[in-house]
Image 1 (spheres, helix red, strand yellow):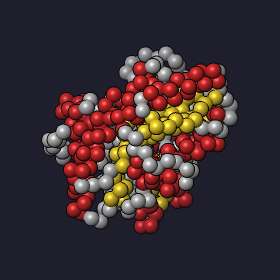
Image 2 (cartoon, rainbow, N blue to C red):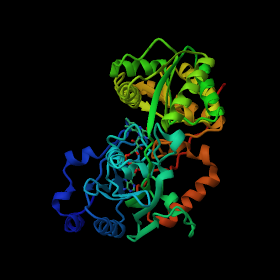
Image 3 (spheres, rainbow, N blue to C red):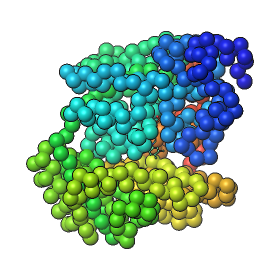
Image 4 (cartoon, helix red, strand yellow):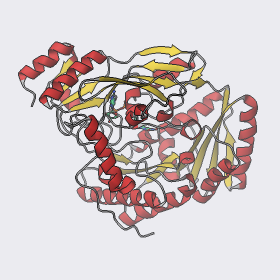
Length: 470
Ligand SMILES: Cc1cc2nc3c(=O)[nH]c(=O)nc-3n(C[C@H](O)[C@H](O)[C@H](O)COP(=O)(O)OP(=O)(O)OC[C@H]3O[C@@H](n4cnc5c(N)ncnc54)[C@H](O)[C@@H]3O)c2cc1C
């Protein structure tokens, strides 16, 4: 509970119109895109400037009130659920693109900018911001930075971390720090910029970011390769990379996902094959033409039953849009959709997909798999019903097995969605107790009162590791 006198302090900082406290308003910010996790905040505040963020943090620090920074709440790890109550901080007013610097190839933005708006704004100037999470129509740059989000273009262009050059952030003690900048080279001290990237709102509140831009590729082509077995699809992935080509996009969809996507998007995708690769190459016209021809030949040699190159830009766009809609399409199947992002070295993709299917069979749950094949970043997705406790227990056991298997294959429990609350019990499996101790030490140094997004990343209840029969 936040007392009336403290609410008065917040109101003096941001004005009544930027404060939400009714039950209905708080309910809206009690959950995010993660199924089945909910907790009410005491108050929702929407500051308009870095100074207002500082003033809010100072009140929270004095009163030991938890602060949960929130972009669009599209994260899939319960990262913005205010589990300890307190204040949810919204960035809807801090949503401006402050500067596009064409000399230094940077863009400086406030955290509330919507990812797609940024991408479109720089593309209008012939520039390119590659990180493209499928949620980019709704996600914010603040959220992308804090989850270190990836996207379809991750294989060739990297993830958000590869584009964050400098940050302005408010610390838990109310001080403002500026890290990095527009410099291509800067080795002055520890790399605090990268420390804050992926920190899930637990180390500082990002109030401004300077991001790297690159020239926009001249052209692109998209193709679809169809397979009657997963091994052939996985072989194509390995052979394309071994042939020293890095496609801009190399996405995998299994048959059940394909069916759901086609039912949703109705663009004439084939649904009678076991797997599909969506491949895109960009660059100069000559390179794109050469690579697409070589990649098509590799897919056919590896056993693709059909390879189709999109004839027009519209057809290509329809294919990538359909892929981006995979989660929304699967979400129509059952009341609850649990999507994870277990990630393995790309050479292990076929083994991982087979293991996921065996685990689904073992626990008698339906799991559809799609994802960024080129990155080994898979999205095993379970359409289920949170009201069925017995089924939910089986789903949870299946995902524990999947995380365990990913680690056994040299992978990780999360490639892009973050740890938040839902994967905190598994973090130690990946980083070990020494890793947890280092991370807790960093947290303690930056946030000794534990007011920044408490209950995320760390948990008291590390899962006992199950033994997977493979
Ligand atoms: C349909 C769908 C598709 C998705 N596809 C992808 C995908 O392809 N790739 C991918 O990586 N993810 C994907 N996601 C997950 C999600 O969209 C990303 O994690 C995204 O970056 C979250 O952005 P957001 O603005 O919604 O942030 P939120 O969910 O609001 O917040 C995410 C985290 O950032 C913190 N945070 C937000 N703003 C700040 C700030 N200013 N300062 C400090 N901390 C802050 C929050 O506390 C939280 O821990 C998808 C989600 C959905 C629902």
